[in-house]
Image (cartoon, rainbow, N blue to C red; front, top):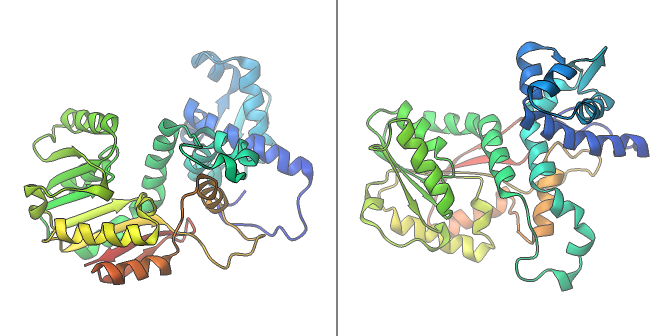
Amino acid sequence: MSIHAGNGKHGHSAADIFNSAVAATAIGAAWELGGFEQLHQRGVLDIEDFAAGNDLDPAATTAMFRALASVGVVIRESGKVLPGPGFDDAYRSKALFYWLCQGSWELFARMPALLRNENRTGAFHRRDQQAISRASREANTEFFDPLFWRAMATVGSSFSTVADLGSGSGERLIKLVQEYPGARGIGLDISAATIEMSTAEVTRRGLAESISFLRADVRELRPRPEFAEVELLTCFMMGHDLWPKADAVRSLRLLRELFPNVKRFLLGDTVRTVDLPDDGIPVFTLGFETGHALMGVYLPTADEWGDVFDQSGWNRVNTHTSDALAGTVVFELV
């Protein structure tokens, strides 16, 4: 297993494909249940003790680790589990497998129905949003944070207030106000439950005076006095929700109007890849792009984003790209 694509020109056996599909679900399960973390920290796991300690069925637990062993993620020896040759890659990518299997499996299982135009009206698909949220938090830390802090190195401390669009758990704002003492944070999110959760979290950490949250749809924002204080604007992992193109242009123009004193806008997202050979697609890309096609959500390319910036009054001064996850990008705008 590799985070980058291997050579698939000669194909794979049906057994390899089938076993990999089962193992993909087991990666997410082992992460959620704590098995991956125990292997990462201790380097060994006793299956019987792990099952008993977590009130798990012993036979089913053994089957989960057998699935992982079938693709080299772990090695089973006399009732114990050790990291296999593919463990490090799988551990780093665990949130991507969780997104696919625990968060989006129903979407892919219904592919035959979702391809039919007669079924593509209204709320025609479902995903496990709690699992998607957990996967997104971990993926954000693993893949987006390095790009974000690279971009922040150019921003420095030249801001007093930051607004995070689609703030989710509030973790980005928490890290920012901790890194830049005296800064204030405003989080905007469409979900009332998410706002409640993030508000409770900043209160628990003693940051309620520094960070506040507002329930709002980024696509339909209304003016607020505190927006004029914002000098740094961030938006991660939801930019594609602003599309199609005409809507994205309108939304970004609106942001320019509502946040008139912004000095930097950091927009991070996963863009649609181009010119990748079918036998050279890296981890996550195929699932992300296929999943959004099934949902009817358009994914723009980096060049298409550039057209939107030009038409909406934003100037791109830098583009930070990831070597670890294809299509992952942070646009630095002024």
